Length: 321
Image (cartoon, rainbow, N blue to C red; front, top):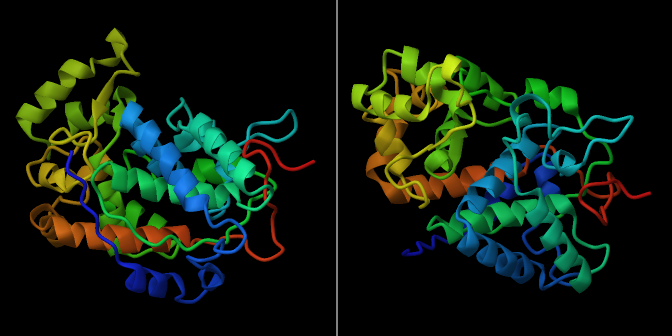
């Protein structure tokens, strides 16, 4: 697979330094304390994606679902305890819809061996998401670092803050705005669905009931996703049926033909305010890559814990004792 490398360090670091808590993050945060961290994460991600391309999509989903609840603080990675329910089984994370936790554990172990008690799980996840995109053929960018890890999860927030597969455009725009992200960020970040899979339970209503779905596409997906009486909730279909294992602009090209898998996907191209951006990204892969990279930096700047806040977890699944 051809690898497209789009490096925008000056632009993206500038974006990272634009106001708020994100101003405390820096791409060179570990330059003296753990200079090998990026190469350690990259090597582990390269091996994982080579073994299973779905690993890349899993890392992207983990990063997004973490940042949208309490900010980018690795709270999603915490396991349930007898007294504190975690985020892994709440809301849009339920039903094992998030995965890749074992890979984060592996990377954390390797980073701890190189630089003990130095690099947060939150930063490891941010780097893993960047490398996942690039290894699947997408852009790369300078990742601002310096996040610290949460000491508690927010299962309630996981149930309320994450957009669902049936969310309409107004709900998507409002949900992103609540996190300080624009409609352009929404359009660009939704392009992460150019890789990965969705469960039948998430798109059954779309392919049986929506009136803005391609008839041929709907018929194809109904074969994957039978009516409830026949079961099959866990059957999987690619979010981008054109190029499911490559990070490109196929997602937008699918939307332009009415072949968005999720209702929330097709809402971006449904005679609404984001139609023009979908057309831009669907016809100009470089525009999509550039905007996606910049939006990932802004996503990573949502309410990070910095300075003395939080902790540097030694195990990403548990708080330090």
